Image 1 (cartoon, rainbow, N blue to C red):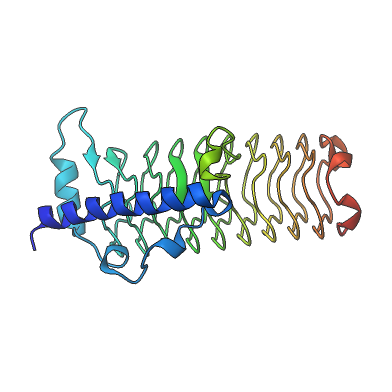
Image 2: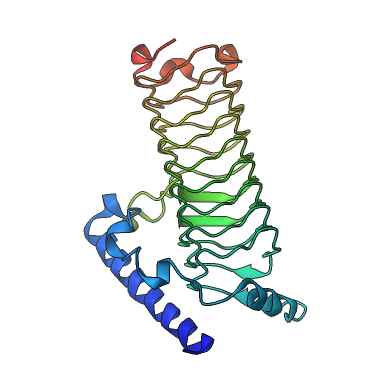
Length: 274
């Protein structure tokens, strides 16, 4: 089968998935971010690639000034794209499951609705990128730079040790309620030593996340779901805890807690461990 035909099939599948997800979201807003039930993750579209690394590099090299390589909805699963400069690529709805993107440059890249299950983005550069409804469950983003990125993505069970979210927006999108509550999801993620300086994390979902030693200084945690999180040794100077649910959270040796904002207005503070 030719590459062009495969790309056409991939694009067609993306339209079908979008229709399925959109339709289900309208019927069940609360489950809009759970896309897993609507697709066959064992199919070739989510396990294979329609291009080799060499072919992709040739396409990038052939771009003229100002051109962008549209890889939307393309299956690039399992490829070794480590260290690649992808700043001129559009990866909306792309399939990047189990793809090696270590050290890749994705600054400012649109990855909305992309699939990157168990992908390796260690030390990847994602500054200013768009990650709306992006699926990173089980992915590895240790040391990745997501500063000033829009992260309404699902990073459940992901490894994000030392990742940088400074100035990033992980908050709930309150303008698109027909699709449910789209927001950053960090449930059970390993965020040890991660930095969230001045990040917007209002209504973010991160139950049981490991935030030991994380820097949350100046972050807005208003209304965030933090039951069972481990904040031991985290820096919370200037952090806004208004209505943040700290039920069963571990708050040992917090730094700058005396300078935190609305710490006494956190929900279930009396049920946290100190």
